Length: 193
Image (cartoon, rainbow, N blue to C red; front, side, top):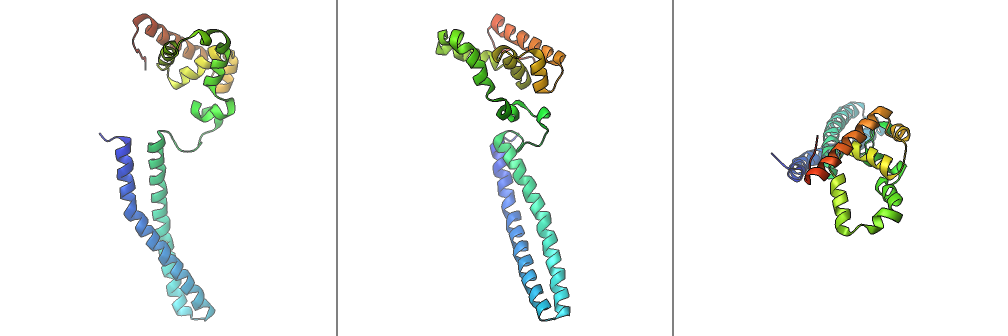
């Protein structure tokens, strides 16, 4: 089994000869285009047909290789970022990290509600423990949990924002509470994925 960094290196190395051939085809295409224009200006029609055919051939090959390079670079970027590059889904179907720009920082909003009372009295160790407890939640559970208990949104507001039903929010909160309760009772990392 290969790790992401090994795959990135392998894909990058495999792209080098493809890029070299791609650049060769583009150079040949450009040369043929220049020669084609010169032949048409001088009205050398037979020669211009030959250069036009060569131009179309090199253009088609460069386009095919360009598509391969683009797809490979997309995959490499996905491996590097550990997420799909770009926002390719409608806003309601995006994950939390893609929506945070519109909603603001969820964590900051959650901390704001507790900052004046509870968080000031927490030690660094308590804060780390709180982070570890919340790390057991999936991204969707965390998003719902922080929205309800951190930001103080209602179940309906959270459902509207996450583009899910109110009952699904309730299910996410119930699962979150069970996971957190399991950690507090057993004192270990427990996940129910």
